[in-house]
Structures are given as structure tokens and as C-alpha cells.
Length: 66
Image 1 (cartoon, rainbow, N blue to C red):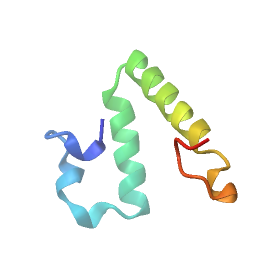
Image 2 (spheres, rainbow, N blue to C red; image 1 turned 135 degrees about the vertical axis):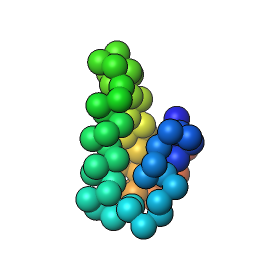
Image 3 (cartoon, rainbow, N blue to C red; image 1 turned 45 degrees about the vertical axis):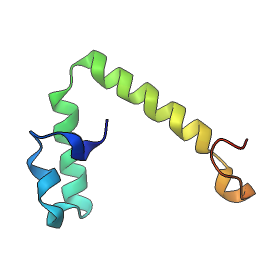
Image 4 (tube, rainbow, N blue to C red; image 1 turned 90 degrees about the vertical axis):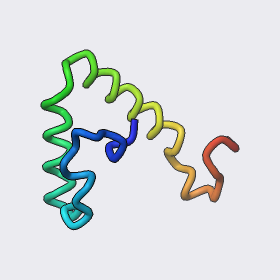
């Protein structure tokens, strides 16, 4: 799910708030809206994505080529 796909998200419509503090606030609010199970699922997806991307910039590979 993309954060900008949420119609209830007031930050997604305000492009000016995507500075460091606005992004941090958005992530905190997103975490508070999720149930513990949803947060765990989000964390697992994020870790899986980071593992796929880990070290690819150094080797010059694209995601999926590994």
C-alpha cells in the first residue's frame, strides 16, 4: 500500500509537508492508526524489501537480477 493512496490521509494532499518533519509525523501517525498485527505485517514487508535491495547499489545490479 502506498501512503499516498489513502483518501483519509491529510498529509498526502499537502505536498509542502513532505519535508523531514512532515514525513516523520506521517509515519508516526500511520503507525498509530494500524493495529499491532498490521504493524507487524508492514514491518515484515519492509524488511523483506530491504533484504532484496541490500548491497545492490554497490554491485550495480537492479532489483530482481540477483
